[in-house]
Amino acid sequence: MGRAERKAEAREEMLRRELYQDRRRQVTRILQKPAAERSPGERELLSQCGDLVRELETRRHRRDRQRSREQEVVDDLPLLQEKVLQLADAVRRASYMVIYTGAGISTSAAIPDYRGPSGVWTLLNKGRSVSTGDLSEAQPTFTHMCIPRLHSAGLVKHVVSQNCDGLHLRSGFPREAMSEVHGNMYIEICTSCSPNREYVRLFDVTERTALHKHSTGRTCHKCGGELRDSIVHFGERGKLTQPLNWAGALQAAEKADLILCLGSSLKVLKKYRALWGMNKPLQKRPELYIVNLQWTPKDSMATLKINGKCDEVMRLLMSELNLDVPEYDRSLDPIFEIAVPLNPGEENSHSRQPIKPTALEPDPITPSHPLSPQPLSGGWFGKGCAKGRKTKR
Image (tube, rainbow, N blue to C red; front, side, top):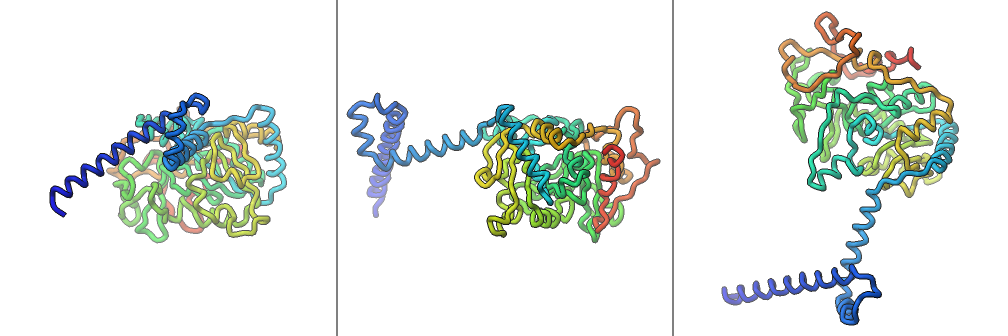
C-alpha cells in the first residue's frame, strides 16, 4: 500500500470515528428525554441505532447501580431496634462467633473510611485532597471497647481486622485472639531473627515506608538487622506471621457458626473464600450478619443486613445483652505496657507524634524503664494487652 492510500484510509477512519461520535451524542441527548417527548424523527433514529442504544442503556444502568451502591442507607430507629433484637438472639445462640472489622468502626475516632461519601478512595476518585489527621490523638471507639467485653463474656472468640490503626490492640483485646490482616501501624518487625522479633512503638512506624518499600530505617536490638513495617498494601501479599495471623483467622473461620461484620465494605475480604465457609455445604456455613451503611458484595448471602452506624448498633446490642462497656482509659492503654524504647541514637529516626500518656502518668518509654523486644513465638508479646485490662472488665 502506497503512502497516498494509507493517508486516504486514515482520513476515512477519522471520518468514521467523527460520525460515530456525532451519532453517539445525538442518541445520548435523545435518551435523556422522556419517551413521550421524543419526536418521530428521534424515535426513528433510535430504531436505526439499536446496538448503540443498548450499549448506552447498559452503561447508564451500571452507573445508576454504582451510585445506588455508594449511597448510605440508615434504618429508622424502630427497624434498627428490631434488627438488633435478631442479632442479639443470634449472638446468644452462637457457640463460636467471629467478628470481621473494617474502617467503619474507626470513623467516630476521626479516622476516615475508604468508600463512604467522605472516604479516602471516594475523595481521591473525585480529584479532591485527603486530610490526614493526627492518629496519635485517636483512641478506641465505643465499638472497639465493646469487642473485648464480648470476648471476656465468652461471646466472641476471634477478631479479623482490616484496620491498621492499632485501636483493637489499644482497646485491650487479647492479641492471641486477633488477626490484623493488613498490619498495624505501631508495629515493626525484624525478619532476620528466627522467630521474627516484634517491636511495638508509641508512634506510627510507616513514615518512610510505601508499596514494596517496608524498611523503617531502624535496627533490631538483638541482631542489628533492618526493621520493617507490618503493613500490607494493595497489590501485596502479607507474608508475616504476626501481627497478620492469617493462620488464626482461617482456624476461627473454620470453627465459626456466626460471623458479624462491622463497618467493612467487604470488597477485599470477599476474595478469601475460606473466611466465609465457602468450602462447606450451604447448610453448614456460618450465619452472616452485616452492619454497614453501604451495599456490600456479601449482602445477598447475609442472614441479616443492618443499615446503621457501628457505635449505635453496638450500643443497642450491648444493652440487649445486658453487658456493661468500660470507657477507654488512656492510663490503662496496653500499648504503654508493651511498647519498646528506641535504640540509642534513633530518637530522631521519625517525626511522627507519639501517643502520650495521661498528664498524671510518667512516660514509660525512658531509659529508667527498660523493656526488651520479644520473639514472635508461641508466647506472644501481646499477652500484656489482655492482662492490662482485666481489672476493668
